[in-house]
Image (cartoon, rainbow, N blue to C red; front, side, top):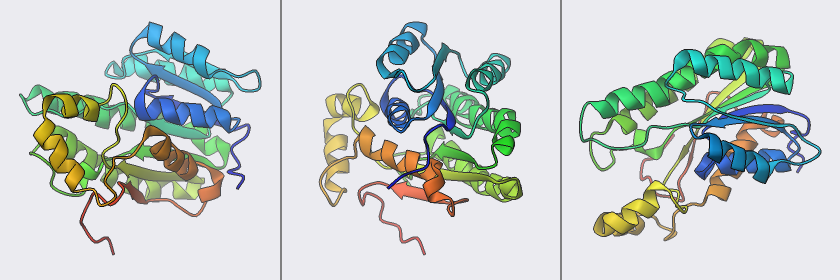
Length: 253
């Protein structure tokens, strides 16, 4: 199936490793011109070198998304470098943790504010596209109780609500907004690899709750995100797509 992505322009945040990196690699493979960022200049440079192709534009720079002004300035540079923006995928996250109040501040600034600032800054470009698409990264932690009362879980739930409301607000401007909520995704250097090594009993308890007996991969979740971002899913907006290999037990009617 042709996703209709060739020649599109996408901006992705947090894309040197994990899900964000998988998304960028797939977008480039589909012929999308891509701009992405992460905090470490060396990692960004290495990622640009690894994913670049002669037939697409790849623009990467280091930026801390917690610095609102620097982040918004980077978004404008990225849109200028690409000649506009058709797709925005805010992928940076502060991650889990519940050791102190700093987790709430970190997750609010990184997960929530970076997403909202990005959507607002890029909305003029997405409107000009005529077929703009935003895919926000949620989590199954937001749709069911999970582990403990963490900032990550609550802020991700807030992002799902924001995504739905934004989709209603900008739909008349031909901009779609959706959320993809992954379940446990295992990859080298990721959170679940760390948990497996440091909290083996907890890791095993999660594995027992997955009917198919395995966690998802970066490639699997990236394919879903890219499909939802693409014109091939043109009827889908305001949705929260749960991709968890059966991990969650809720019934969504």
